[in-house]
Image (tube, rainbow, N blue to C red):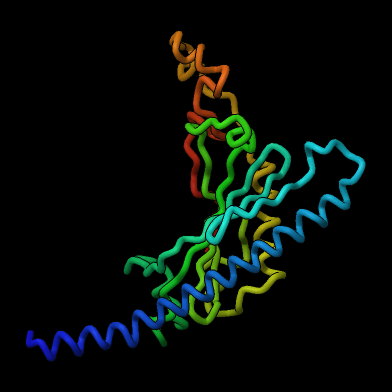
Length: 229
């Protein structure tokens, strides 16, 4: 390939693909900023309705910076994390069967916002080995069209891609669905054999942290049930 051909190829990439990706990034960042506002709104709304109850059940929003935020819901911590990079889907993904993408394959480039469920005590007591679970991820393209993979996120699956843009009402629906799932997703007793032996070091360490990693499904398989399509 000649130098002129290489230059033309690079210029084409910068003027097309790189430009599309920057638009996707801007849209995803805008959606994530709106999501933070919605999280603040949810926390204030629920706390007004919970006034007079045990303060430990109150919601607490924390802004973790440009790409992260948290919502404490009683014993659960929902972590919202935007990835700084833009992604393409593998060729086996269902997104390629959509007429919306077939008409313009560049609309398949997406930013991702992940929603994880941890135990709030994992952060309070600095139990760094505790486990969290991905319960939803939101894909956003350059037209701000979206779809959601996740627990109980019915109605916003991949078949929804190209039908509507992501607004505040939809974000609130996604967040509240994640909250409800997290509170129903209980902490299970770990299998006996996984905790039957403890070392002196582990017992001494318990003053600072838990003597074993804790997660809602420790010892059990966390299946991708309820993934919307």
